[in-house]
Image (cartoon, rainbow, N blue to C red):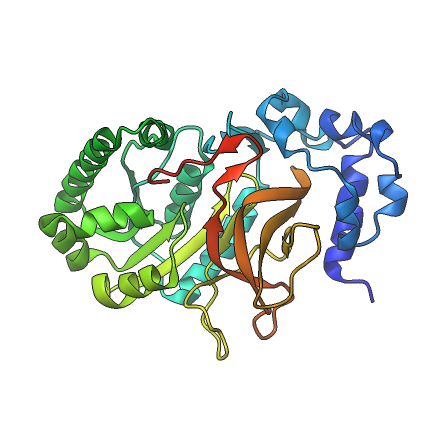
Length: 348
């Protein structure tokens, strides 16, 4: 039986390899493929036949990524955090916005306020997360407050053994956050687990958050089950605490509502209309439910086609929620190295 996603795969592959609609990037790769993508890619499983092109996103001219069929759309360029080397670049016009509308519904189901102002303590600039959070706030008619945040600088400090300067930089971020919280009515705080830990270590700032914030959204870095429990039960019991997994390439995978039988406090679900996340072993085979595997991403949209991308994270495979068609993933962990690159995490 053919699934809706299989049909979506066929249509999107045909789009990206049509000379009239495809991007110069993918059209230029067609001759080097040992299969005919339009004729032979019929299901989601066939996406495994494509090469992982994510390394090329560090150097490819971004104009080559824009499909010819969408040249009339205003595209923006976003960069990854550069954790594994030079940043990777993506382009986006409207596809990510559609994904965010879906993610907003999931977060609202968890208890995140549908309206209200947001404070984002995380990257902006070339990083897509700042734009994502701004759009979340705007969707509910809320105002978007942010603090300048350069995660690459913190990672450089940590990688060079300058943890003292990294701590000083975090303090600088928290000073600015405190200024916002003392004068503005903030309903939603979006940041990372290390920054939340730093907030909890500053009594005055912590009390400001406890006193007014109705939802705390964490992401950007992994958090173990005990950390999630502490955030939910000990540090912010007055607020909804929700996690979001994702990055520039895959988009966002919000925490799904808990279901009977879930053994993990936080289970993420990727956007079912455009994204498949598989967890695979060292031989590329999908692991069984309950087992840990490496994150393998397939992003299938009319704007960006990124099949077979092996990510830097591992996770545990969780069965779909009742009524859902895609697996959940839980207990995200970052591998320590990829090839020759040593992975350094700072606060994002």
